[in-house]
Image (tube, rainbow over all chains, first blue to last red; front, side, top):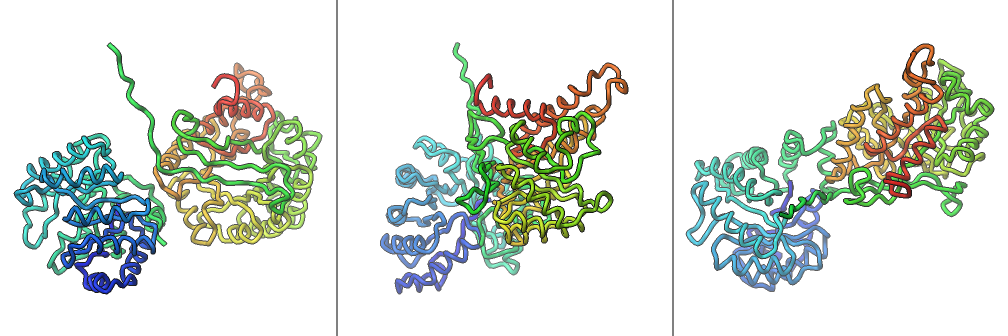
Length: 266
Length: 327
């Protein structure tokens, strides 16, 4: 499971304040903490408070000073993504994200190809978020086709079927799971399949339990990446256990420790 | 019409650890040769796919006491040196080309000669001084006695970067401490059980002993005696390691002489088994065939006994490494 750590996001007040004050401390502290948990990528998002490419550059540089973990630049704005990529020091990058909107694909896919970055493709289009399985698959297939045409390998492509809050859109749960199954059939080897895990738990009374439960159910269908709360040890334990059950890891009594070791957790 | 042959190569992400045994003078030891094993980036001998920077090696077994329980066929080549571990080791290196000497402190066994830690240390020093190759040192297999013996032995071999064994799931604290204190590598043993193999490696790490200093010993079955179980465990652990499982990315040692020479196929005379041929040829062949099987399963260190089997195995390693002759 590829863990993309979600916490360096100006949607959180401490990160928003840090960005406004150009105070690296909190950004770097979260970079270290999440890297220490074994994150494969650190998501970096300047949030709704800023549209400035220079803010993304500053944040990426701050993270790079603190840790060597790969970075996931997260923005709906192409200029912001570009600034993040240009600030890169040579470590692997993941772009979050493109949609199936042709105008968006046209701009973001070449960016991934040019920088040798991986790319998250969210299965929405100009009409918005899909409400059924078919459009989730159609949009993902469209993104996959454009990205592979541009030279990206399946290993560089992360398809996101769009997870929705269970509290408000309960009927979408099964649709997301079915879309994941279908994504695994797009190619051999298949592309990565990723979700924004915390979406599902929004405004619920059992946030952690709901995220963990969805994670293991989706892993059984083929999910192999998630933007998630890597500080939740219970989530990491659930993921490690799901990998055992799926025969992706060899059992040992200390398998929870082995999982963290494999992730390079400190 | 031209057929396209599908690409069969795999891109593994993992790599087997490289482990060096023995220390030369520049590293504070006295060895004239040191051995590095491991480093593979693919399944055994898939030269088209990965790198094999270090070839598998053969350690020849030497005892601190005469190996009277060995069958005649394998005692005979050492008849003149049994009882003198130094001379025995020398013979293995000079006449039979052993890459390492595996000293088994069988004489310490309480149900046998019950020799003291000091006597064991003396035997270890005698072997160390007699040869320039690195040493592997095994206890007698009695856990309590081995824990008494190893402090003296590890100290007597201090700084020589020997390979000591074994640690197990239930007994790892003494040797991990000694390995750290006196600069030795360790053998992590498990009873034909991949889950325990992984567990022992993690336990050693928990005890502060780096996994990069361990060699894994998954137990050995002789040809005809469970070899397929061990083979599949070695194969599975190697695949897991190449897929990135660091707790499985250890070089593998197979202590096979001890198992082979218990098998009736290697011991029984032609009188007892009519039609099976002369045991003087059959025994070494049984050992060589067992060794070959473990080589292709992924063994990095083979602990063996009979000079003819060792010779055949060394040739097989050359061929498998593409170092001459047909591969």
